[in-house]
Amino acid sequence: PASPPDQENGSDLDLESKPKKGIIFEICSEEGFHIRCESIEEAWKLLTDKVQEARSNARLKELSFEGVNGLRMLGIVHEAVIFLLEQLYGSRHCHNYRFRFHKPDDPDEPSINPHGSARAEINHRRCVFDMFSFLASKHRQPPEYRPHEEDGDEGQLRTARRVSMEVPLTVRFKQLKVTSKESVGVYRSPIHGRGLFCKKTIEAGEMVIEYSGNVIRSVLTDKREKYYDGKGIGCYMFRIDDYEVVDATVHGNAARFINHSCEPNCYSRVITVDGKKHIVIFASRRIYQGEELTYDYKFPIEEASSKLPCNCNSKKCRKFLN
Ligand SMILES: [Zn+2]
Image (cartoon, rainbow, N blue to C red; front, side, top):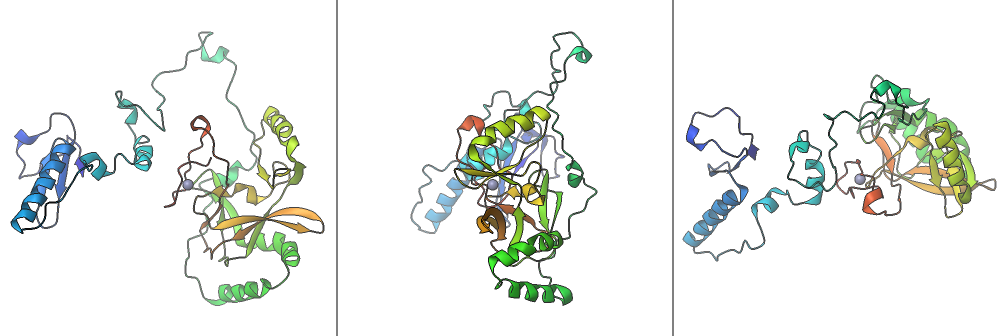
Protein backbone atom coordinates (compact mmCIF):
# COMPACT_ATOMS: atom_id res chain seq x y z
CA PRO A 1 0.00 0.00 0.00
CA ALA A 2 1.10 3.57 -0.65
CA SER A 3 1.20 5.85 2.36
CA PRO A 4 0.75 9.61 2.35
CA PRO A 5 3.95 11.53 3.09
CA ASP A 6 2.68 13.48 6.06
CA GLN A 7 1.41 10.52 8.05
CA GLU A 8 2.50 10.29 11.66
CA ASN A 9 5.73 8.45 12.00
CA GLY A 10 5.60 5.17 13.81
CA SER A 11 8.00 4.55 16.69
CA ASP A 12 10.27 2.24 14.68
CA LEU A 13 10.61 4.76 11.90
CA ASP A 14 13.45 7.26 11.88
CA LEU A 15 13.02 10.70 10.39
CA GLU A 16 15.81 10.10 7.87
CA SER A 17 13.57 7.81 5.87
CA LYS A 18 10.98 10.50 5.27
CA PRO A 19 10.36 10.60 1.53
CA LYS A 20 11.35 13.61 -0.54
CA LYS A 21 8.87 13.19 -3.33
CA GLY A 22 5.60 12.44 -1.62
CA ILE A 23 4.60 8.80 -1.85
CA ILE A 24 6.21 5.84 -0.17
CA PHE A 25 5.57 2.28 -1.17
CA GLU A 26 5.37 -0.54 1.32
CA ILE A 27 5.13 -4.25 0.67
CA CYS A 28 4.64 -6.42 3.71
CA SER A 29 3.36 -9.82 4.67
CA GLU A 30 1.94 -11.32 7.85
CA GLU A 31 5.15 -13.34 8.30
CA GLY A 32 7.04 -10.12 8.97
CA PHE A 33 8.42 -9.43 5.52
CA HIS A 34 8.69 -5.69 5.00
CA ILE A 35 9.88 -3.44 2.18
CA ARG A 36 9.67 0.33 2.25
CA CYS A 37 10.75 2.41 -0.75
CA GLU A 38 10.22 5.74 -2.44
CA SER A 39 9.62 4.20 -5.83
CA ILE A 40 7.50 1.25 -6.77
CA GLU A 41 10.19 -0.06 -9.14
CA GLU A 42 12.73 -0.10 -6.34
CA ALA A 43 10.27 -1.90 -4.05
CA TRP A 44 9.38 -4.44 -6.71
CA LYS A 45 13.09 -5.07 -7.46
CA LEU A 46 13.81 -5.73 -3.77
CA LEU A 47 10.89 -8.13 -3.62
CA THR A 48 11.85 -10.14 -6.71
CA ASP A 49 15.49 -10.27 -5.51
CA LYS A 50 14.29 -11.71 -2.20
CA VAL A 51 12.17 -14.27 -4.01
CA GLN A 52 15.10 -15.33 -6.21
CA GLU A 53 17.37 -15.53 -3.17
CA ALA A 54 14.89 -17.70 -1.27
CA ARG A 55 14.39 -19.95 -4.29
CA SER A 56 18.10 -20.36 -4.86
CA ASN A 57 18.60 -21.24 -1.16
CA ALA A 58 15.93 -23.89 -1.56
CA ARG A 59 17.62 -25.06 -4.78
CA LEU A 60 14.59 -24.15 -6.85
CA LYS A 61 14.70 -22.98 -10.46
CA GLU A 62 15.09 -19.26 -11.02
CA LEU A 63 11.84 -17.53 -11.97
CA SER A 64 11.48 -15.03 -14.78
CA PHE A 65 9.88 -11.71 -13.85
CA GLU A 66 10.24 -10.38 -17.36
CA GLY A 67 7.51 -8.01 -18.46
CA VAL A 68 6.24 -7.64 -14.91
CA ASN A 69 6.95 -4.34 -13.26
CA GLY A 70 5.89 -2.47 -10.17
CA LEU A 71 3.11 -0.43 -11.72
CA ARG A 72 1.65 -3.52 -13.34
CA MET A 73 1.78 -5.34 -10.02
CA LEU A 74 -0.22 -2.55 -8.39
CA GLY A 75 -2.73 -2.72 -11.23
CA ILE A 76 -2.14 0.94 -12.07
CA VAL A 77 -1.71 0.28 -15.80
CA HIS A 78 -5.09 -1.44 -16.00
CA GLU A 79 -7.64 0.66 -17.91
CA ALA A 80 -10.41 0.15 -15.37
CA VAL A 81 -8.12 1.34 -12.56
CA ILE A 82 -7.00 4.37 -14.57
CA PHE A 83 -10.65 5.16 -15.22
CA LEU A 84 -11.27 5.26 -11.45
CA LEU A 85 -8.01 6.92 -10.42
CA GLU A 86 -8.64 9.84 -12.74
CA GLN A 87 -11.81 10.61 -10.81
CA LEU A 88 -10.11 10.80 -7.42
CA TYR A 89 -10.37 14.04 -5.52
CA GLY A 90 -7.30 16.17 -6.23
CA SER A 91 -6.45 14.48 -9.53
CA ARG A 92 -6.64 17.84 -11.27
CA HIS A 93 -3.43 18.83 -9.51
CA CYS A 94 -1.52 16.27 -11.61
CA HIS A 95 -0.41 18.78 -14.22
CA ASN A 96 2.07 16.51 -15.96
CA TYR A 97 -0.40 13.71 -16.40
CA ARG A 98 -2.35 13.27 -19.64
CA PHE A 99 -5.91 12.27 -18.76
CA ARG A 100 -7.49 9.52 -20.80
CA PHE A 101 -11.07 9.32 -19.53
CA HIS A 102 -11.86 12.22 -17.20
CA LYS A 103 -10.23 15.47 -18.16
CA PRO A 104 -10.71 17.58 -15.03
CA ASP A 105 -12.22 21.01 -15.48
CA ASP A 106 -10.81 23.71 -13.30
CA PRO A 107 -13.52 24.86 -10.88
CA ASP A 108 -11.27 27.57 -9.44
CA GLU A 109 -11.48 29.61 -12.63
CA PRO A 110 -14.77 31.52 -12.89
CA SER A 111 -16.23 31.63 -16.40
CA ILE A 112 -15.55 34.76 -18.39
CA ASN A 113 -18.55 37.03 -18.88
CA PRO A 114 -18.29 39.00 -22.12
CA HIS A 115 -20.59 41.69 -20.71
CA GLY A 116 -18.45 42.09 -17.64
CA SER A 117 -21.14 40.86 -15.29
CA ALA A 118 -22.71 37.47 -14.81
CA ARG A 119 -26.15 39.08 -14.48
CA ALA A 120 -26.00 40.56 -17.95
CA GLU A 121 -25.45 37.15 -19.53
CA ILE A 122 -28.19 35.02 -21.04
CA ASN A 123 -28.73 31.86 -19.04
CA HIS A 124 -27.26 29.11 -21.16
CA ARG A 125 -27.98 26.37 -18.71
CA ARG A 126 -30.29 23.89 -20.37
CA CYS A 127 -33.10 23.62 -17.92
CA VAL A 128 -34.79 20.29 -18.55
CA PHE A 129 -38.23 20.21 -17.03
CA ASP A 130 -38.65 17.08 -14.97
CA MET A 131 -41.82 16.58 -12.98
CA PHE A 132 -40.54 13.28 -11.61
CA SER A 133 -37.43 14.71 -9.96
CA PHE A 134 -38.98 14.15 -6.51
CA LEU A 135 -38.60 10.40 -7.08
CA ALA A 136 -34.84 10.81 -6.68
CA SER A 137 -35.20 12.51 -3.31
CA LYS A 138 -32.93 11.10 -0.64
CA HIS A 139 -35.90 11.19 1.71
CA ARG A 140 -37.63 8.50 -0.30
CA GLN A 141 -36.07 5.38 1.16
CA PRO A 142 -35.80 2.41 -1.20
CA PRO A 143 -37.12 -0.95 0.08
CA GLU A 144 -34.75 -2.69 2.45
CA TYR A 145 -32.61 -5.39 0.87
CA ARG A 146 -33.99 -8.79 1.92
CA PRO A 147 -32.37 -11.60 -0.04
CA HIS A 148 -33.85 -14.60 1.79
CA GLU A 149 -37.44 -13.70 2.50
CA GLU A 150 -39.32 -16.99 2.54
CA ASP A 151 -41.98 -16.59 5.22
CA GLY A 152 -45.75 -16.23 5.24
CA ASP A 153 -47.44 -14.04 2.67
CA GLU A 154 -44.33 -13.68 0.60
CA GLY A 155 -44.02 -17.45 0.12
CA GLN A 156 -47.67 -17.79 -0.73
CA LEU A 157 -47.45 -14.94 -3.16
CA ARG A 158 -44.52 -16.59 -4.88
CA THR A 159 -46.45 -19.84 -5.25
CA ALA A 160 -49.32 -17.87 -6.70
CA ARG A 161 -46.95 -16.22 -9.13
CA ARG A 162 -45.31 -19.47 -10.12
CA VAL A 163 -48.77 -20.77 -11.02
CA SER A 164 -49.41 -17.57 -12.94
CA MET A 165 -46.32 -18.27 -15.05
CA GLU A 166 -48.28 -21.03 -16.73
CA VAL A 167 -50.98 -18.57 -17.72
CA PRO A 168 -50.69 -17.39 -21.37
CA LEU A 169 -48.44 -14.41 -22.04
CA THR A 170 -51.30 -12.18 -23.18
CA VAL A 171 -53.28 -12.84 -20.01
CA ARG A 172 -50.25 -12.13 -17.86
CA PHE A 173 -49.64 -8.96 -19.83
CA LYS A 174 -53.13 -7.71 -19.07
CA GLN A 175 -52.53 -8.12 -15.33
CA LEU A 176 -49.16 -6.46 -15.52
CA LYS A 177 -50.33 -2.92 -14.75
CA VAL A 178 -51.65 -4.08 -11.38
CA THR A 179 -48.85 -6.54 -10.49
CA SER A 180 -46.04 -4.14 -11.37
CA LYS A 181 -47.42 -1.48 -9.00
CA GLU A 182 -47.04 -4.01 -6.18
CA SER A 183 -43.65 -5.38 -7.15
CA VAL A 184 -41.58 -2.36 -8.22
CA GLY A 185 -41.06 1.31 -7.35
CA VAL A 186 -38.89 4.28 -8.38
CA TYR A 187 -36.20 5.50 -5.98
CA ARG A 188 -32.86 7.27 -5.99
CA SER A 189 -30.27 5.04 -7.67
CA PRO A 190 -26.52 4.63 -7.09
CA ILE A 191 -26.12 3.95 -10.82
CA HIS A 192 -27.75 7.09 -12.18
CA GLY A 193 -30.42 9.52 -10.94
CA ARG A 194 -33.48 7.39 -10.40
CA GLY A 195 -33.88 3.68 -10.79
CA LEU A 196 -36.53 1.02 -10.53
CA PHE A 197 -36.31 -1.13 -7.40
CA CYS A 198 -37.81 -4.44 -6.43
CA LYS A 199 -40.40 -4.26 -3.61
CA LYS A 200 -41.30 -7.99 -3.50
CA THR A 201 -39.28 -10.99 -4.61
CA ILE A 202 -39.60 -11.45 -8.38
CA GLU A 203 -39.02 -14.92 -9.86
CA ALA A 204 -36.80 -15.65 -12.85
CA GLY A 205 -38.81 -15.38 -16.06
CA GLU A 206 -41.53 -13.28 -14.48
CA MET A 207 -42.94 -10.29 -16.35
CA VAL A 208 -41.88 -7.21 -14.39
CA ILE A 209 -43.30 -4.17 -16.14
CA GLU A 210 -44.24 -2.87 -19.55
CA TYR A 211 -42.05 -0.16 -21.05
CA SER A 212 -45.11 1.84 -22.01
CA GLY A 213 -45.41 4.80 -24.33
CA ASN A 214 -46.41 5.51 -27.90
CA VAL A 215 -45.07 3.32 -30.65
CA ILE A 216 -43.78 5.66 -33.34
CA ARG A 217 -41.98 5.15 -36.62
CA SER A 218 -38.21 5.36 -36.41
CA VAL A 219 -38.03 8.26 -38.88
CA LEU A 220 -40.01 10.45 -36.48
CA THR A 221 -37.62 10.18 -33.56
CA ASP A 222 -35.31 13.01 -34.64
CA LYS A 223 -38.25 15.35 -35.13
CA ARG A 224 -39.71 14.48 -31.72
CA GLU A 225 -36.36 14.79 -29.99
CA LYS A 226 -35.96 18.29 -31.40
CA TYR A 227 -39.48 19.21 -30.30
CA TYR A 228 -38.92 17.99 -26.73
CA ASP A 229 -35.54 19.66 -26.66
CA GLY A 230 -37.09 22.98 -27.67
CA LYS A 231 -39.61 22.66 -24.85
CA GLY A 232 -36.88 21.69 -22.38
CA ILE A 233 -38.33 18.23 -21.79
CA GLY A 234 -35.95 15.32 -21.22
CA CYS A 235 -36.98 12.55 -23.60
CA TYR A 236 -37.13 8.78 -23.16
CA MET A 237 -37.20 6.41 -26.11
CA PHE A 238 -36.81 2.68 -26.53
CA ARG A 239 -36.02 1.17 -29.91
CA ILE A 240 -38.12 -1.90 -30.80
CA ASP A 241 -36.31 -2.56 -34.09
CA ASP A 242 -35.03 -0.66 -37.12
CA TYR A 243 -38.50 0.68 -37.89
CA GLU A 244 -40.24 1.35 -34.63
CA VAL A 245 -39.49 3.16 -31.38
CA VAL A 246 -41.47 3.50 -28.16
CA ASP A 247 -41.64 7.13 -27.06
CA ALA A 248 -42.13 7.15 -23.28
CA THR A 249 -41.59 10.88 -22.83
CA VAL A 250 -45.25 11.77 -22.33
CA HIS A 251 -47.06 8.44 -21.99
CA GLY A 252 -44.34 6.50 -20.19
CA ASN A 253 -44.41 4.70 -16.87
CA ALA A 254 -41.85 3.77 -14.22
CA ALA A 255 -40.07 1.41 -16.66
CA ARG A 256 -38.33 4.32 -18.33
CA PHE A 257 -36.29 4.84 -15.17
CA ILE A 258 -34.70 1.39 -15.37
CA ASN A 259 -30.95 1.88 -15.56
CA HIS A 260 -28.46 0.08 -17.75
CA SER A 261 -26.16 -2.58 -16.36
CA CYS A 262 -23.49 -4.65 -18.09
CA GLU A 263 -24.55 -7.53 -15.84
CA PRO A 264 -28.31 -7.01 -15.71
CA ASN A 265 -31.03 -8.90 -13.85
CA CYS A 266 -33.70 -8.19 -16.48
CA TYR A 267 -34.09 -8.32 -20.24
CA SER A 268 -36.61 -6.84 -22.66
CA ARG A 269 -38.83 -8.60 -25.17
CA VAL A 270 -41.28 -7.33 -27.74
CA ILE A 271 -44.62 -9.08 -27.47
CA THR A 272 -47.72 -8.63 -29.61
CA VAL A 273 -51.06 -8.38 -27.82
CA ASP A 274 -54.26 -7.83 -29.81
CA GLY A 275 -52.19 -6.92 -32.83
CA LYS A 276 -50.18 -4.24 -30.98
CA LYS A 277 -46.49 -4.36 -30.15
CA HIS A 278 -45.41 -3.88 -26.54
CA ILE A 279 -42.02 -3.87 -24.88
CA VAL A 280 -42.02 -5.95 -21.71
CA ILE A 281 -39.27 -6.22 -19.13
CA PHE A 282 -38.72 -9.75 -17.78
CA ALA A 283 -36.60 -10.94 -14.84
CA SER A 284 -33.62 -13.01 -15.99
CA ARG A 285 -33.06 -14.37 -12.48
CA ARG A 286 -34.73 -14.23 -9.08
CA ILE A 287 -34.65 -10.61 -7.88
CA TYR A 288 -34.95 -9.83 -4.18
CA GLN A 289 -36.59 -6.94 -2.42
CA GLY A 290 -34.36 -3.87 -2.40
CA GLU A 291 -32.40 -4.78 -5.54
CA GLU A 292 -32.29 -2.34 -8.40
CA LEU A 293 -33.70 -3.66 -11.68
CA THR A 294 -31.48 -3.26 -14.70
CA TYR A 295 -31.27 -4.37 -18.31
CA ASP A 296 -28.62 -4.09 -20.98
CA TYR A 297 -29.37 -1.03 -23.15
CA LYS A 298 -27.34 -2.64 -25.96
CA PHE A 299 -26.41 0.74 -27.40
CA PRO A 300 -24.33 0.56 -30.58
CA ILE A 301 -20.60 1.13 -30.05
CA GLU A 302 -19.62 4.76 -30.64
CA GLU A 303 -16.37 6.61 -31.21
CA ALA A 304 -14.32 7.71 -28.21
CA SER A 305 -15.61 11.31 -28.42
CA SER A 306 -19.25 10.37 -27.85
CA LYS A 307 -18.80 7.59 -25.33
CA LEU A 308 -20.97 7.55 -22.21
CA PRO A 309 -19.20 6.08 -19.16
CA CYS A 310 -21.00 3.24 -17.44
CA ASN A 311 -21.58 3.38 -13.72
CA CYS A 312 -23.22 -0.02 -13.26
CA ASN A 313 -20.49 -1.23 -10.89
CA SER A 314 -20.79 -4.86 -11.99
CA LYS A 315 -17.82 -7.21 -12.31
CA LYS A 316 -18.44 -7.55 -16.04
CA CYS A 317 -18.74 -3.77 -16.61
CA ARG A 318 -17.68 -2.73 -20.12
CA LYS A 319 -16.94 0.78 -18.79
CA PHE A 320 -19.08 2.47 -21.44
CA LEU A 321 -22.72 2.33 -22.45
CA ASN A 322 -21.92 2.74 -26.12
ZN1 LIG B 1 -21.28 -1.29 -16.80
